[in-house]
Length: 112
Length: 108
Image 1 (cartoon, chains in turn brown, purple):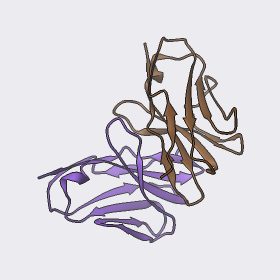
Image 2 (cartoon, chains in turn red, brown):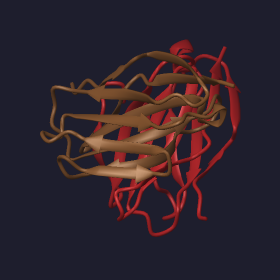
Image 3 (cartoon, rainbow over the protein chains, first blue to last red):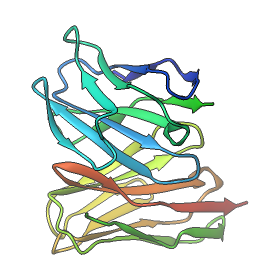
Image 4 (spheres, each protein chain N blue to C red):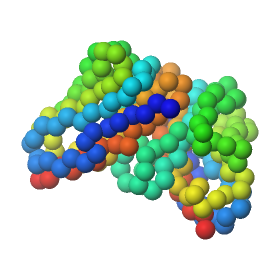
């Protein structure tokens, strides 16, 4: 069964540093999403991406965040200058044509 | 902001019992999804409901979407310890909003 993969599985970074989280989506899926989940809290929508453009973004997705699909396959989330409160699990998800959304295993980001 | 309220927040039952968990909102959704999430892992999709009043069954799990597409329920029959986990609902209206989840514990 095809699956979404994410790298790295765990990233530790210092406050103020830039991080790039990577996702390899399921091929032929059209919609891509990033979510975050702070430890013990709910899954929060960050941004959706369709046809190489941001489709929707939440209030969390401010100027410090950006998304790209640089090579037509990988899907990245960049945080320009990390803050302590950015520490969370970040999940990439894909939405296919069958109303099904598949999540990756997540990247645990720890900002120190 | 579309809020999804899930209840109960925690549920602990004995093996063999039946249970229902709820997902409610004041917003109408084009579709609603139920997920199960294990600690440290991503949510795993259980079902998507699209039509108001729709009922879907997945073995011992029965999912219902409210007629007005604002709420949903998940019923588990004869719960087993393997059903233990965090059950999340998420509503779709161009973005996906998740509820906080119901943490289910099934004791043998």
